[in-house]
Image (cartoon, rainbow, N blue to C red; front, side, top):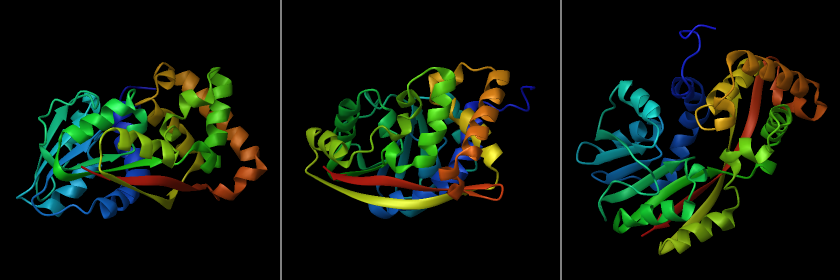
Length: 273
């Protein structure tokens, strides 16, 4: 397949993962965060910037946004997208465990489905607390554990078997699914109060085959095992996994015609400095 036909993982993330998952879920995060006019806001692990773009009009021109991600390809896509109304967004490359930001610089820190990917979650939580001003708050969302997502459990199981890796290697997105663990990490970082709520939404994608193919490509943005696959191996993997899922009677309830319809569950935490 040509380079033009096969976009880079960050472009695939913006084209597939953002519309399917994060456009529906961003309002959920912001409902809990309750951004206010004029707030200094950090979008941590911003990816291609969906949260930053949604919060900009809510905090208005009196507010400000710094959007940080460790992946320069994600930031390149973010910078290429239309500028929203409201607060100006500064896109900045940085590591969540050692944020290149001063103490007490923000009133609000937002992190959508990023915390579970941090290699040192306690350090990231401490950094989040450090950059918050007194009385500030952090709002973050993480998927519930894989056991709450049977379609993904089956898909990752089939992929892991064919790749010869543990399911956990592929299921990083669901690796901080225990509310107690999340609470402990935030409490240990020095937050004064932590509130965690469970939320659920159903996502829909019009083509199961396309969903599987794009899931592999999208995973390449964050999962090294996938990033190493060449195009032929990815295509064969998608075909094999798709056949296994279509033959699984227990998973047929998630397939409507050609579409895949999957309930997703997450924890949303709001932690107060």
